[in-house]
Image (cartoon, rainbow, N blue to C red; front, side, top):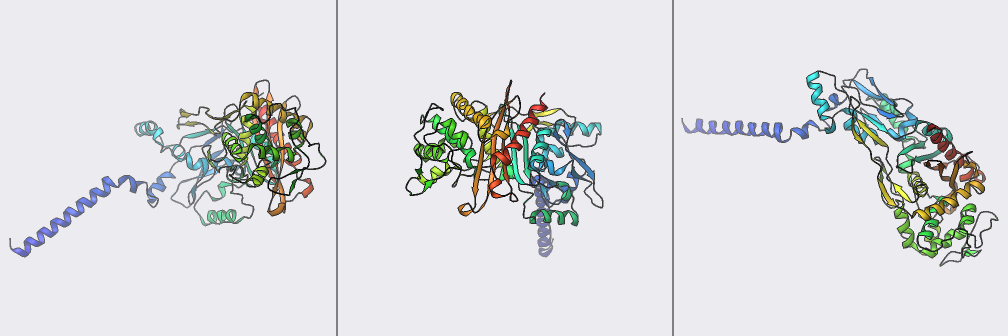
Length: 485
């Protein structure tokens, strides 16, 4: 072979070798990456080639699948009463991916999760059509309906928990939206989503988990717990050292109480009953910022909570003395999600034991066999059983003969705390109405609730936790109790 031909042969050999190396690299080394790549349309086509598994409430599916017209994606997600359940499920869209449970549990719902490997393998031999698995939630349908009915056309949120297990019974956020309207991949779906994103009322914002508010006077139960836990006071009916007027530390500003309520040296019980700012502001100052932070940490503040859907962290900040005093009454830089305040009420109702909130009770294979069953998990010991029972007595007085009488349920012991949180620079905006509570039956406490209402249409003087939020909490608690009969 002459020299030019030899060079050509060597060059061609190198090209063939490079092609083989490249081919093997793609087929073996990058196979998994390319198979799951977001731009691999075959993966997406396969994903929507079969019906998605369902999300279950009270034993019934609240989701479904429908055939798509004029698309190579055969099935799309549909909801039964989408606005009612969107705060729980999130959305699943052919064009815009998914969120919340629809996203976090996508592997089970599509049937692609490793937990379903045996089921997929078996279907290859039986010839059965591929199906997704189901997600069974902890939600109580009656409680969810009561929460949405109570909120009505007002902005706000409701969270209800089972104090003994941490199971989420209701998770409502208003205004809400219907995920079905952009579940496909047409221009109409895109337009519908854009309208929701541009809506000034933010219907796609999950206010129960992702919005933080000043908790107002509902936070006074945390300050009371801190006082009891740190030995500042031990008798809830003894007088406190609370002068009237009381001036904020390092300031000439007097802290005000609402109306002519009896707050001078009021006992813990009476101070919570009438929501005395001076008593709890001074209490927070006496404890100091470090001890207040330590107590709030025990209730779950200052870190994100996963339900498994992520909830924003509620913040009790490091701050100076006057701001710490204001934070002790739920103002200043104190910010919390409705979920967090439901956790506070839940821990108190559960004799100080705070349980991890969760909303997935079970994951099911397509044949309905469980592949995962949730086990309740203790998150922390927020306060001692003895002190929790003292706070319960105080909260029950609030509902029996205080600011929370609208939460009363005949034949049921209810504990609660109202709150009206200032909003805006120098309280220029309409305040938020809060209520946290729990109900007791012969079998303990089956439910704890937090409600926040942003009612921009109400008269400012009519906005109060007892007036706007307490009736909603009452109806949600009653729905849970009635469902267990």
